[in-house]
Structures are given as structure tokens and as C-alpha cells.
Length: 204
Image (tube, rainbow, N blue to C red; front, side, top):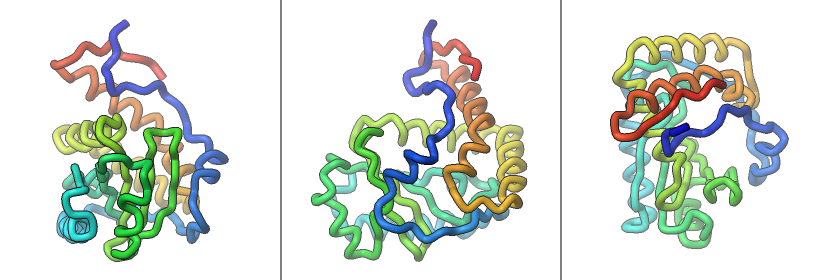
């Protein structure tokens, strides 16, 4: 049965494992979801300039992803960006320079595509770091572009996020788990519509 090369089976995040890979004490924050802010692209531009000033040509790619990258979509007011460096597992090659620019290392996941997350307070940012060839940044672009071009899915996703935002989650991974079914279904539609590859729809 053919599946899209970026497909992943449905599953929920293990909250215990999510806590284990956190670095240091992450200050608790209540998840807030707000209507789309047209200033978000400018905040990403500020972030882009900061990262490139810190790392120079070590930046192999830097993409605005997540809900703040989709025009018209409600979101947490936090810029999500995917940074690709030569080796995301080699923290010494990029983390100190990002820390010098004000970033803080928050997540270390060597078993999941050597994923790292650094945060920044201004503009409030989650900077996800991967190596070339990682599938997660590619998935993020598929999801972003699909929502930008499909108003029905964008509106359904916004409604769910706004409803969850009213529930006062203090764990972002728990919040993500409550979005997981719809996110999976949206990916399924995007993969099925990809004319470049064959994808047999996979039920949750």
C-alpha cells in the first residue's frame, strides 16, 4: 500500500517523554490563541535577521512555519521557525552563538531527527533546529502551504485552536495532543492531493 514519504502514523505525544527532553526549567505559560496578526511576518523577518547575524553561512535554511506563517489563521502569538544547520546534533557549532544573541536552549531530542528547540523572548519564538534531510521541516511546509490554500481546513483548524485556547492549557504538548486528530486528517488530505507521489489514505 503506497504512502507519502512524509506520512507518519497517527499518535499522541508522550507527555512524560516531552518533559524528559526539556533542558532546564521552562517557565510555565498558559496557552493563548489569538486572531491572526498581520505583524507576524515582520516579526519573523526580525528573527531571520537575528539568526543570520549570529550564524552567517551556517544557516542552510530558515523557514517561517506554524500557524503564525499562515495568513488569516488564529495562532499562539509565538513565531515558529525551522532552522537547518549542517549537523543539529553538534550543538557546539551553533548553540553558543545563538545564546549570544539571546536564545535559550529548551529542548534536546537526539532520538527524533536530532531536533533541538531554542526560544527567544523578543520576538517570542520557538526556533526548531534540524539537519539536512530531516522530514519534519518538510512536513511543516506541506501543512503551512495546504492551510494557506484551503480555506475550509484553515477555518476548521482556527475554530479548534480558539476553542482549545479557552481551556487554559499550561502544557503546550497537551494542547498539541488535543489538535492531533484534525492535524492528522489535514495531512492526509494534503498527501492524497500530492500529484508527485502515490498515497493511499491511512485511517487514524
